[in-house]
Length: 483
Image 1 (cartoon, rainbow, N blue to C red):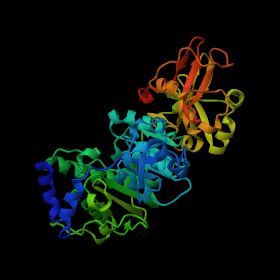
Image 2: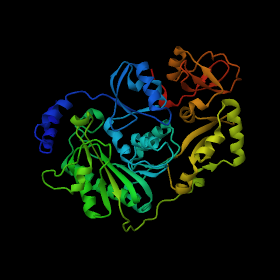
Image 3: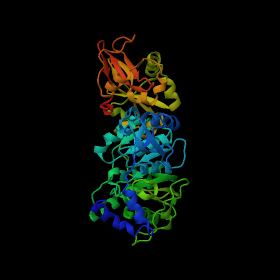
């Protein structure tokens, strides 16, 4: 254990019961196994559990508070190097970070605000939690992080998300008492006590922490104001610093006494919040929060709480930004265009696009030769809100023909029954590196056709375009280069 970590541990000694510091130090001396969360939009957990561990030599243990989460205790093939990882069938994520989305109660199709969403791990979890039937406004204030957020949502295969880039502090007055669920995974000091988990390893100055706490206060207030009466807020941080955890909840509880409650969550880890940080005594309700010490559940340090908005509160709304989609080049397809496209895809690929649109309540939009599938409800709610991305990339144009996107096919691979070619193991290895295949595999399809490729297990491995002497690789750049 480094001297820096020992020094940081000392501040937590007074917060732990007698004898627990030794357990904490022992836990931190052990390597933390990787963890993943299965994409239940693409594959069932039982099917994944019955195949992947045997294929890849994984020793798997369930994450106790996430039905789709696994810890990988042993791995013959690294979890980041599989075809399923490339295709978005699971997300590599610290087990502790799987907690927040699981704290929300069940709801058929909630309206959700993810206030600080990038890079998108918890946003994809929310999409899976509600079977992509809800609408998620996925916002992040950092323009530099929007690309990762957008990419992860596309890789996961999410229809019901709108990605925006605004200060999170504004949403409470832009959308007062609007959302059923609000997730605030707040920017924090990253004091997880496990630097390798992705948290910040360097010490945070008192001035920096004061600024973080002020921002956390403002963001949680915004989340509270944006939540409808009866709705839920989950506040989470990847830090154990009580100034950023219990103290933030305590401040909002004191400000809105009677209109807000911290709720105990059935089935959540038995890991109560602190009564005091040694200086302040917190509201007793703060004990219902969840403080994941690394030695209790073999995770990084983490904090989360579910809050219920009990009553309406006065809000002075602000005018929110507006920019009709038509001014950005987004154009809705006509019914006749959808019917023609559906017929084309059914004939070549055996895919029922029209049935999908009707069953999911989706509309199709084009922009710059790209085709997007967007829920009608999302358009009705946020059709004039400036955004970085809307819905799922469903197709794109090649030589005047719209072909299904990689993202749509990976979401519904088994529903695409036509224009498929099987590659052998050596060909798949080249394909995953982004290589064209020369010569093209034998096929009756004419030059110019975009075909769907599968391996000998029947797993989709990408799209290719027949060009006479070769099969051109159409894998998105973000999934190329795998071994």
